[in-house]
Amino acid sequence: MIVSKDLNDSCARPLSKDEWAKVRDYAQRIVLCPEQEKEPCRLLHKSFFSYLTRLEKKYGRHQVILATKADFLAQPRRRVQIYREAYQKARTCNDAKNCMLIASSMSGLYIFDLDDFKKGRQWLRRFDQWLSVYPDADQKKERDSLVAYVAAMDNAMQELEEKGTANFPSRKNVKNV
Image 1: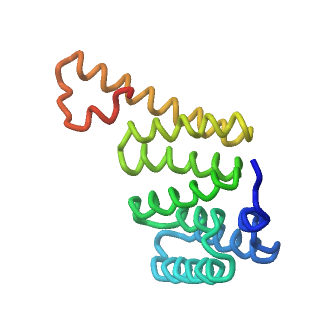
Image 2: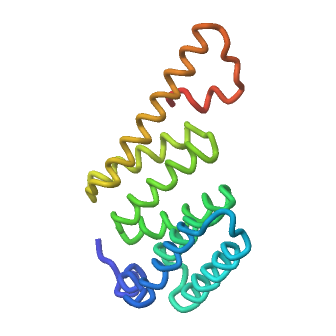
Image 3: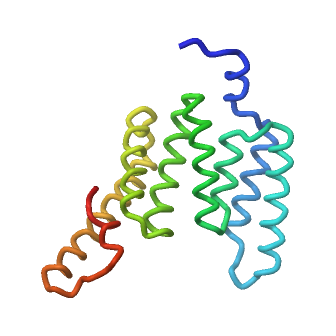
């Protein structure tokens, strides 16, 4: 496959070391922000998103910036939209690392936040595929944890069905596809 210079340029990580350090600093401060300090945490989030918006204006809608933004959004459906865009951009660039990381995030988002095991499994399969291209020990542990959780939920649902106590409309989302 022949890739144009422009595509290569749009695929390279655009942020300077200083810019990336600032993103990581914001992310760490947000993660460590005490829940009881709602207003300072809200202002920190607002400042972080403003910074990411400035980076987007400077570099465009790059997969690294988009995925980072999605990581910190509160609305799960909006996170899905932005992760999908980031994933498509990463795939176009054959950016295995970010495809793997985004697939990991999407798996957890569908399984834990959206209770959609069907889509969670689809993203787990993508996660597996990208892990085989870009191995990462920490992400492998994350993947194993997600798989174990889904298996435990499947077992719990099966037990409830066998006892005749499971009659959930969302059951189709838990069963294997």
